[in-house]
Image (tube, rainbow, N blue to C red; front, top):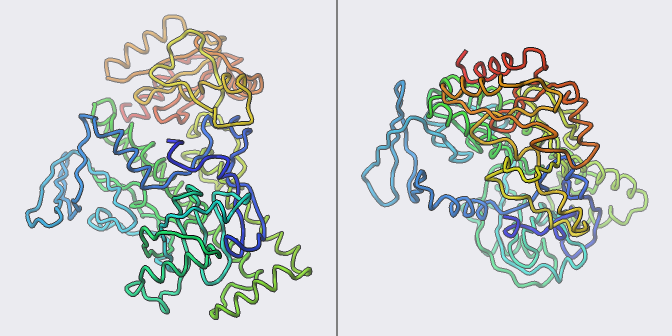
Length: 520
């Protein structure tokens, strides 16, 4: 997948520019792409165009006997009884509806979700407050950017105000630009108008090809509920954010990360259907936080543009004159730099990406400040581990961090497996220090749960695995209480279900698992 997106060396920065070939007003790091971030996550952030990501998924699924992909169909409506959903689909250029009966329907049909409309689910947030145009174009921008590479290039010229996402500096680019829909109605938008906007954003005579353009409304919407009966919403159908922060796709993937094992558990009979209500309870508050952060980021950008003298000025020539005057005004340089620095949280969301805690009502104090947490609902903190000759990581492939070019081969080879790899997608996982007292009792617990179709695995450190780095070992020994024989019970989605004390541990483990699955 890393071969499909932006190489790390090209994606390290966010540039603030008059246009792509004009003056650079400021520069910030893009997300956490420094090697130190791999102390907190086994995979560094990676940008990939959504169409390429969807093609990657489709290719991975095309030979899966459990998956059938049908293109050219649209969802019309559905009805449901206690156990079955009947959906009506419509094929393009065919008047005959297709009826599909299923146990569940997951609506992942975007911000204008017909599934959501069919359910009559409303939303919280603003309907609209600005119109945007996404222009997908192909161009070799390397001769223009030269050494000013970056993942994002924020263009401040009022003729094309927006940002270029440089998925590939020598080819695949996306420009997301504000435009006045009163002056340029969507229905009158043409290739020529798109070319004018892209030309202004580049600011140099560079050949390019317009591949597509699509208008959309900048808005913040979160569905009032994610589930009615056996029909469930996920992704943009459940929530849509402004692009400021780039939180939409990751939030959608995290939705199904939470939902997948719960749906599977219900279908396979090892969870009560009531577990699906926890999907709404856990995921909707996360979307509310991420939506609020996106709006906060948008306000910070508006403040930056206001300092440059372009915000709220309808006359393009006047706004451009203000911009060019502001960036050379010695009296404004400190204020402009402060505004650039004020965007840091906008482009570093590690706490929102991996630090969220299910069931926690407090909003994170800062989107960038990730703190490992050993509390129920938190994602199990990452640590680099070794397993010797053990096969406990099977079927996981070794991690490959060779894209971190500044690391030695020794650095790279030390980072082949994460403690997260111990957590199977179809079972609960118990992680314990060697001081834990278990004996035959854990095997007996496995047998009792197996009769209900529930899998649970246990891994001990040291023994089944060990920590590579002393600071991560100390973290698990002290905060996770491995040193005193405590253990961590982890859900199939890698989130902590419980921390269990060594006293009466087996009974506590069983109680937590059965309660989570709605079986107790």
